[in-house]
Every structure is written in structure tokens, then in C-alpha cells.
Amino acid sequence: MQDISKKIIQVIEDQQLKPKPRWQFLLKNYFLWSLTVITIILGALATGVVLFELTHSQYLDLAPNFGLAKRLILATPFFWLILLILFIAISYYNVRHTQKGYRYHTYWIVIFSILFSIFLGAIFYVSGGGEKLEDFFYQKIPIYRQIVHRQVRVWQSPEQGRLIGWIISQPEIDSFLLKDFNLNTWMVITESPLPSKLPYNARIIVTGERLGHQEFLAKEIMPLFKIEHKLNCMKGNNCLMRN
Image (cartoon, rainbow, N blue to C red; front, side, top):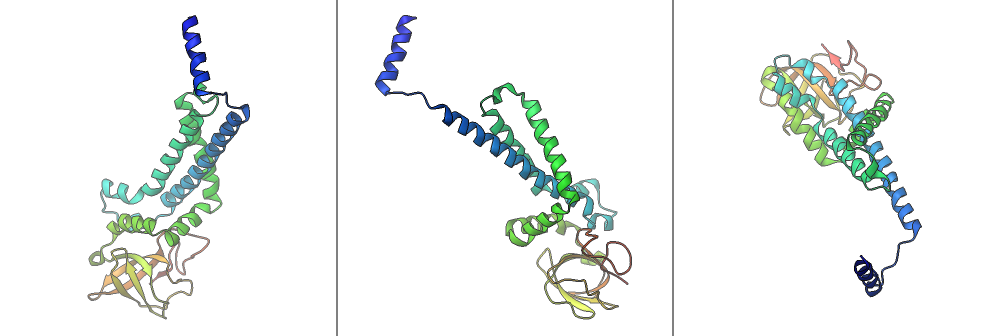
């Protein structure tokens, strides 16, 4: 035992090891807890967008013949769920590496992170933050825009009277150009005047009838997501135009 103690002392002297000051441990501890709080908040933001997409997507209602697998693919906001899982994993790692993190059971760390993210995410969603964050990502982050296009374009079928995309021209009285999520450009024609609230670059759903190669007669136009306080319908709920 004495030999071991002597060897340890000798190693300390040879390598000139010194104990770290207490403030360094405290700083690391505070840093990890701060990161934990930040990642939980980020998880809450992702949860808010998940709730928004699950409750406001309109295209599934217009495709009643879709099977369960296709509906799950369309309805699941994979991008935001992956972010949520990532933030929860980072929170768990941070808590585990705090000064007393070893005392907390893995189960309780994960459960607390999930519940707190859901609680804050629900508040964020109710306040309208989920909608704004999703739209910000769509407008500013190309890779997210591509993910949305690939997921939602499964719904599109011009032959069956369904188009989905975004407006790429300033709407005229009864027509506008639309680029679908397969990156094809369509001339969309309406039988009645378009509403003034049909904005440029808006993501919309168009149902109607295909007229020609790249022409489409719109009978109903609605936003991709139900956004009651921003895009109200002229005739009916959650649509922009209905003939």
C-alpha cells in the first residue's frame, strides 16, 4: 500500500501535476447546465413546429384514398422530430456530465427533457411561434425547403385534379403561375376573380382540372397549412378561393 502511494506521489512530482482550482469545476458545471437549458428550449421550438404541422396540414384531407403508410409519410414532420430527438440526446449528455449528473437515472433525465419540451412547445405553438418558425426555415434554409418538397409532392397528381406548389408570379385577375414541388411550372386559371389575399410566393394547394400540358383550371385554392389569422377564405373555411 505504501509502495503504491509512493508511486502515485512520484508520478505527480514527475509530471508536475496540480489540482485544478474550484472555479474551473464550477464554470464547467454552469456551462453544461446552461447548454441543457438551451437544448431543452430548442427542443421546445421543434415541438411547437411539430404540433403546428400535425394540426394545420390540409392536403391529407383532400386525399381520402391514401393508405395508412402514405398518410404516415405525409403527416410526419421528420425534420423537426429528428431535431427534437437530437436536442433531447444533447440534454441527456450535458446533464450526465454535470457535477452530480451521475446521480440522475437515465429514464428520468429523458422523461423530464421530453415533458418540458412538450410543455414549452405547446406554449410556443399556441402563441403562433410554430407557424412562424416553420415559415422562416422554409424561406431561408434551402435544404429544409427541399425536404418539404420531397415529402409533400407525393400528394400531387394533376391527372386527378391536385396541384401543390408556390406562386411564382404576381397574381392577375384570374390567373397566376405556380411552380409545383416537382419544379414544373403551371399556368393556373380560375373561373372567378382571385382574392386580393393571394400573396406572391405563398405555398398553396390547388384542386380542379388539368386543361393542357402545363395548364390547370382551379376550382379551389387553399394554403398548404391552415392559417386562420393570416389567410382567410372568401367562401368557406381555410381556403383562399372556391368556385
